[in-house]
Image 1 (tube, rainbow, N blue to C red):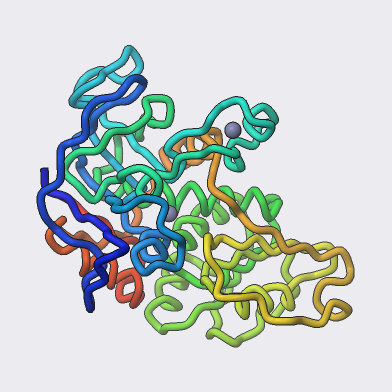
Image 2 (cartoon, rainbow, N blue to C red; image 1 turned 180 degrees about the vertical axis):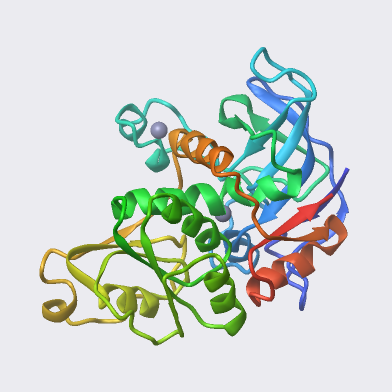
Length: 330
Ligand SMILES: [Zn+2]
Ligand SMILES: [Zn+2]
């Protein structure tokens, strides 16, 4: 099959993945083989292929926002030809303390799609049957792909931040995940304050109904109840923190941060303000979000690349060329 493969030993200028032939995955117990219909490109894929995250395998096929159809290993739940989605959590052990306490996102022995097991930048992928999700029929393949990480983990970030209906919520950075989170926030009648660099991202936030939009260093005109940061930058976390009311929460939606700068505890964190990281996702997050996306008729704005152009797709995410989400269609 054709695939885009990341090899940490072979770094080439401007080329993060090699496009070529790879063995078609063999079917294992408890797994299904999917023909990939679309695969979203996430900033995490960039962190993997640029080496910000330590390599876990000698080579890996990235991609963890997979829309595919079942071609082998069909089950009662997923007959042949069923369209399913697969996200970042590729599996858990099911019996560690975290799994037993409804925190499978923190499992001690997880598998991560496109990081510790091969992902969806390929024509076929093998996935665990119990980590595949039914998808809303109303959505096209390329449009449903960004829901699978950008959407689900953005939704989890709102939960981690403890957002309640009607609250004032800040979104710091406005990429794929924030663009989906704002739709959820609007359905909850929240006021949304967006701080982001790039005029096109600010215009996009305005078009999606943000209450207020400001440049990178701008301060929202009111104190916020919650804030979510989407940029891999500690400085942005501090901007978010400085915008909070007492008791407010910042949730960091980033698997990797450059670093947290030193900050003034008395001014920024005192008053029971909190900073929380958002790690991975649970299957409940996925099911709840996909159901909400179906009800709200989400239609994410996507830019499509072919598998041959996987490097261009990664660079589009890196350079934030496009508003909305980047998707590879093999
Ligand atoms: Zn992701
Ligand atoms: Zn576990």
